[in-house]
Length: 411
Image (cartoon, rainbow, N blue to C red; front, side, top):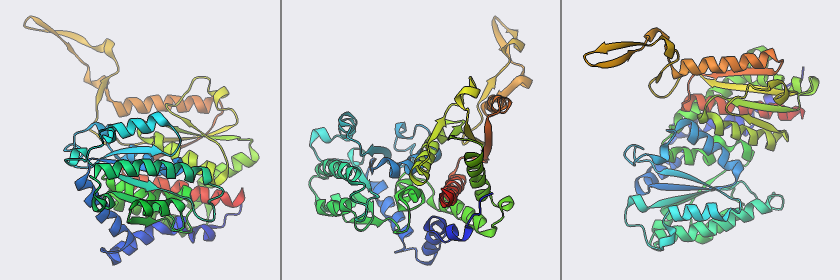
């Protein structure tokens, strides 16, 4: 059993940040960082119909997880009214994919080289950058790609604003460290709205910092509930240093003991719905960046050949207990249906005792898959999230980050 140092992590930025942000906002609803985030994003949402989030895959992983879990599955396809006047969200990763960037620019109307004439044609840019002066040599390639993309999108945005510098400044937000070269370049292009990443926070733990809150607020996500959920997990973590009373230590201990003493070579995160797939991808980035370990994503869960696919692996299963939408019913026993003649038409009478909701039907499918895992000796944990909303997602994200922070002590 490893000896965990709870105090070291409880004082770290990743643990204290959610509660501190909430406390500062309660004390100052005008100039605190969270107040600035809410004011900036509220103004931007009223002026544009699209937002491009530009940055590295590491920093984008968190906002992507929030977007897919807390927003409507086909959010970008809805009308502005159905979206609650929230802008469509597009992620522009900083890899050199010419066709992806050109396709996005065309969608934004940049090829027309004309100023936007209304809200539906207007868009904004959010820049995320984790590089710093001290690490610039190590992340030179990432920073260079971000700078190249920033140049392209800044020019397109300035054209969309009719070369109005004041309008450009209101539609460009930069989240970066103060010593970042990307931040300096954004300043040269005319950006004046800046948010700083906390100095003591690892980039992989930035999802609940301004790097995640600015995009989340633009998506219409309740960032207060998100932070409240995260703060509750930090409070739980600080209450006890005993493994049996601390879910963070329990999860860290399982990972450590099986990897150190049971020959587990890889983790697998198995999710049962598309809304959690990006969350699994975010966790993969966190584990790789902080622990240097690989993680596979299993979606949808594969039961076939389980003993070969998951040999020497630890499978973490995540399921949701409730749905966000009204239950959709499915008839699972078509053979029990009987024809009923009404007038000259024949209708099928369904035996309602055999009709299930999709959630019930899906739960049975998931349980069959899990039982196959257990029967074949696969090492397995199962986490059930009450529902996929801001509070629960805040709790889950903070739980995973604190767990990884604990594991990094005994690498």
